[in-house]
Length: 201
Ligand code: TYD
Image 1 (cartoon, rainbow, N blue to C red):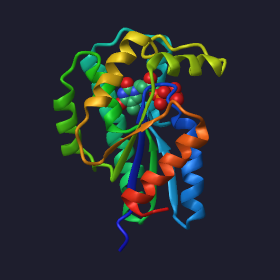
Image 2: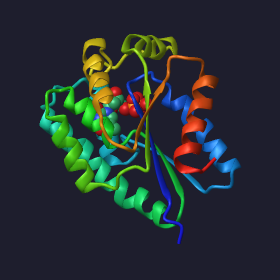
Image 3: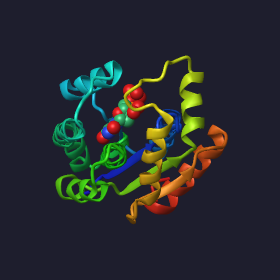
């Protein structure tokens, strides 16, 4: 049976994931694939709890923050990702465990152990596209959408540390994409990588 594929998009706030994901999902569907688009933090109870924390900028210990994201992911994998993969679907997730590695690593936790533990606990993605962008450009894009910055994660100094960890990830399933260009140029590169790496397009 077709084992399904797990494709994740990662990167700092404002890197363009939410523009690229519907475009990619549309191309995959046009190529005949059964696609599940999903995201983390999830829309489940834990994900909503996390979003409330982010919006309110509650002071939370890094270990607590890590535990919440991991718990939300455990439920996401069990209830949505694994069943979809077992049914042979192509899962496209807006963020997955590399976000925890980079964002909670940037809080001062050991990102290499978060990565090792995540790989033990969760299915590794077949492909993780990391959209790379200068954090200040990303934040300007977020504000350009008319949204105020959430104080918990959307701060340039912190995002510099997040971006630095994304740059150091050394896994064969990670491919970095320059996200500083026009959306259409980024779309073309995403398409090309998904085609070369997974043969899905
Ligand atoms: P985000 O994808 O930006 O959600 P939204 O589009 O609803 O704003 O995720 C919210 C924040 O959570 C974002 O700043 C990154 C952070 N985050 C982590 O710190 N660790 C994680 O494991 C995940 C999935 C997200």
